[in-house]
Amino acid sequence: MRQGYVYFLASRPGGVIYTGVTNDLARRVAEHRAKTVGGFTKKYGVGRLVYFEAHDSIAGAIQREKNIKHWPRAWKVNLINAGNAAWKDLYSEIV
Image (cartoon, rainbow, N blue to C red; front, side, top):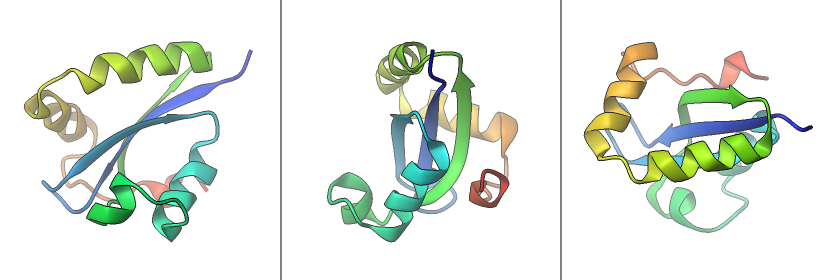
């Protein structure tokens, strides 16, 4: 069974929020930061890791991501603020 992660990236404190899922958090965030993959995060300059949670399986992480993507923005902001009120970049904590 592989571990999975759900994560939020932000453009700045209080800025645009991107929700993603991966089985390798450090690699995936590095890809977003390097802008090697086109799409939403590259277009909007989203690269600050502000929240993440680990799951026992990638299937569990995917289900959690799907649920979160239906949440209002305010709920996502509250989740970030509960563990990272300053919206500091958590990337250095995972590499």
